Amino acid sequence: MQFDNVCKFLAEQYPTEFVRWLLTTEPTEVKILKTELSLEPIRADSVTFLQTANRILHIEFQTLTISNPPLPFRILDYSVRLKRQNRCPVTQVVIFLQETSNEIAFTEKYQDETTTHRYRIVRLWEQDSALFLDNPALLPLAPLTRTDSPEALLTQIAQRVARIPIRDERQNIAGCTEILAGLRFKKDIIHQFLREDIMQESVIYQDILQKGAFNLIKSQVNSRFGQIDASIIERIRRLSAQQLEALGVAFLNFSDVADLVAWLDTQTASSTM
Image (tube, rainbow, N blue to C red):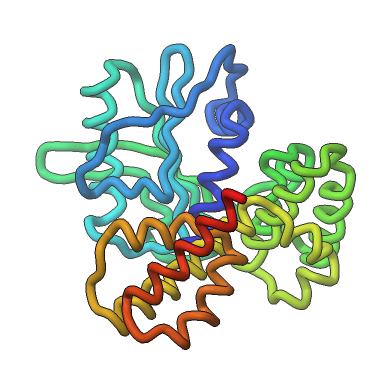
């Protein structure tokens, strides 16, 4: 799921660029739509809704072809609910990140006895890399685009990343690029072209590290102490990746939940000093 999260991060960081790409229009204003589509099958971790002056762009990123409910039905469900709530046209684009021959990646409609609903599919492995190389917002997707020479493509990507003038943006784009390139290339190949130290300083890279560390600690806590108060879990969730790593070491010496709470109290106290 980290790949979907990276794409969602990009679409929400650069909404105007994604509208230009997928709607091929010049938007005057784009905002991220924080909709209340809270019932299943909404999957907020891989879905982005962008609202222009007169249209909603629904983007869904996919690495898997199997889902429950099936993708075409889910797209129909989004469309109906979005139109009911917002009373405007909806354009839906499903972007498949990883090459597959599964028919779902080539299906652009839902159909049953009474209903036909159409949407767009973008298969990144068929896309010309030039568009992605020339746009920093889309650059992290470039490793997944069409190429006859993967190493030449990675060289071009690394050169484009290095030219991004703002340091924080350069780090974030590099981090996203490394993560998505992992769908196609081995890590040692990626690190030949992209500097690992820059990638690891990116916001999205650190966020993924933090979430991974939190899930590990949560699993350990549940295994050792069973279900504990939700407020304690929330305190753990707010820890940084570095603090979670320290907690993982300290946890080995905890006898009960009180030890965990005492450790969390020391972190709270130190952060207020």
